[in-house]
Image (tube, helix red, strand yellow):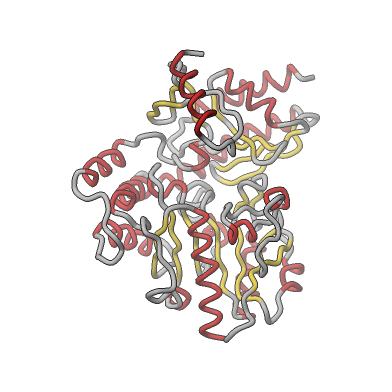
Length: 400
């Protein structure tokens, strides 16, 4: 370990809260699919900063947009019109089922905005008492108290109880359970078309179509959390396109601004109309810098047809991982995912293979204790993924 790494680690241990656990490498530079640590070692990032760097690190068009905006205007309040904010909102509306956009700073904030919109819309239209939201078991929506209460994983709740009232959880891909959970107190359904932190579990197309039908029949809002699976990650610009389902609201964040901090709630006109002046706000939401980065990033995603590329190269990668599953059924339980959002369910802790890959110069991560998660940049080359499969083949062979 170099003196620079030791210095960074010492400062982190002395001055930062320990909520991220022990961290042993400091990443100090990134370019494309590569990152370098403070010791000068190069890694290939197969996690994309947890789904943020869909374009890779420091994409030149995003960097140029940030540089131009940084020397023009960094921040003004939302009491004024902000040109990059309006431009990014226009792009999102023109390429989604939504009519309006609210900008914030993170995925959790986007979920909070969606929850407030759903409750206020229901209150304005139907009166009080209709405030509950149905979310899925094994879901993850963020770590603020509202988003955490919507999250259907008890391990994230521990020590923070009681959770906020108003959430019902039902199993993914179980229409009957969801239908039975709906009563006159429910105003919305919130779900991830592909569950991320819960282990990479895609919703079946028939399930999403059935949920849309139930919501229409019972006058419920349908909100899709596409914070991790959206913007090309799952093989479409929006993961729900696979099922041909249009939601009433979509939450976005992570990759929306190519690495800059941003979140967004997209919504149809009717539910969006509930958020009138004074009902919700975010001081830094839709700031000029993040929106300029977002506009540049979205142009790259669309112009370079990255959702289609994700679908194609993801299918190849999953196929090769499926071959490993057949070859090593004693080590691999299942391969799941869509596009370049892939989970390998293992018969042992994922930490073992994550450490092995890091030693070989590849960064991957977990999605639960036994699930190896791959979220590579959408610009990843096929030969890199082939090399990963070859390494995994050797790893599993060594465990026989």
